[in-house]
Image (cartoon, rainbow, N blue to C red; front, side, top):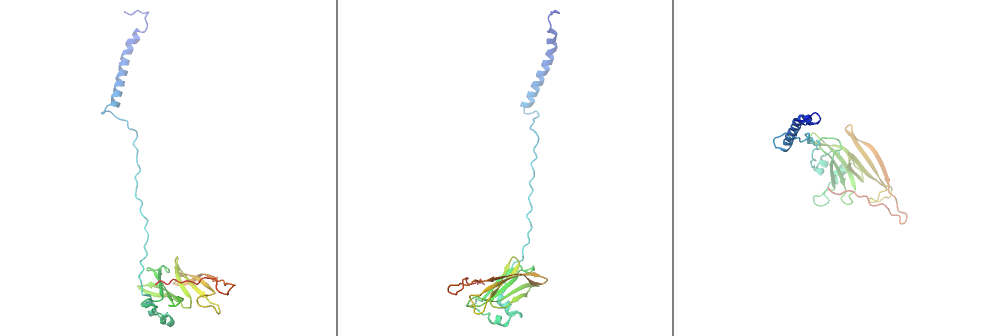
Length: 219
């Protein structure tokens, strides 16, 4: 029997149930975390962004170029001079001195056609023409008939080069050239830029120091 002079006896008796309860809580917590049937803490759910396909940009496709018979088109055109039509003869077999280019010059539904007529002997341009497609037919919207003229399509513009000859210049060595850029507007071509290039002359033997101007010869 415990006397009043021995402190601590009552505290042990009262603290025993508390210790037993704590042990039960520890066992319960251990069982929940280690067992396969308890609640598992796997952290917050991670939401992955959904990748959506980016639509491809829509691009308009120009109408394909319709190959034309350049020689027949020139022969039927009343705006083409008689001298040009007379020179529309094959250089060799069925090969005509005609260059044809297709491109967008007038903003039409079909590509425009640029035709250059040259001489067979030295490939000097003698006429250049632009045809625009309207209602399924080609209409002459530009013409230049003079010696040493040639037209090209450059980024939607019509560029016409004309050789300039001084008195006494041989055909293969002009004194210079004019490069004229035309833009389409109000149903016609208008001059926008003009550049004059003067070729230099050699001093020693009196010859021409510039190379012979070249003109594409492919049909």
